[in-house]
Structures are given as structure tokens and as C-alpha cells.
Image (cartoon, rainbow, N blue to C red):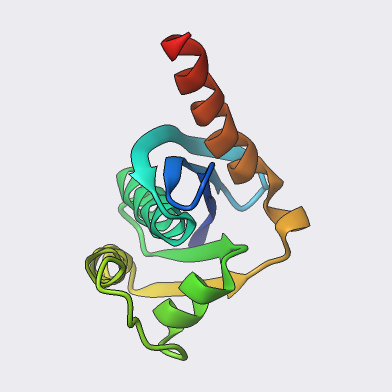
Length: 141
């Protein structure tokens, strides 16, 4: 069974503030097969983390082969990981629809896992999110 690994991260400069998302999708060899790097307007850090998760999984759905495929998700947001796992409740009303969107997207994969990783292991999506914020800032002058 093939595996797609999605590393995702959200960034907010201010909380809330200008925000962006990043996701790097890797195949089984560790080669990057897809990426997401875009601004999302003003959001909190947790909102950005969820939106990065949703965007990364949606990109994985686009790349998913016809054969059965496993999805591995890696994030440095312990809150989002624990909420998706069902270990923490989603109390924030603004996060509830993002949580539902993430769970719905994950259902596209029969076999999926999510894992919290240290920030140091999540540098590529952080780079992608911050690059989007930098592009936005530069375009505004």
C-alpha cells in the first residue's frame, strides 16, 4: 500500500493577524510530490493550523492513486493533533467548523494517522507558510 505523508503548519503574525498555511506532501521515498503555500487573511494561529491541515489533506486527495493509499499527517500543533485524535474536545466555536472539515477530508482515506512532531521536524511547511506571508507583505509594498 502506498503512503502519502503530509507535513502541515499554519502561521499567524499576531494572534489574530495576517496568516498563512504551508503543507509539504512526500511520497514513500521522501520526495516532495506536492506543496501548499498561501495566505488566508487574518486568523489566529490555531485557525491557521487547522486550515493548513485541511489544505494539505485536500492536496493529498488530488494526488491519491487509484490503489488503496495510507495517509500520514505530521503537525507541530499538539492542540490540533489531540483534537483530531479525539483526546481533546473542540471548545472554541471558531475551530469547530475547521475541525469538521478536517475530519471530513481525512475520511477520504480509509487508513490515516496523525502525529504530533517537534517544530524542528516540521520546518518545510513552516517555510512555505512564512514564504506566503512574505510574498503578501512584499506585494503590498
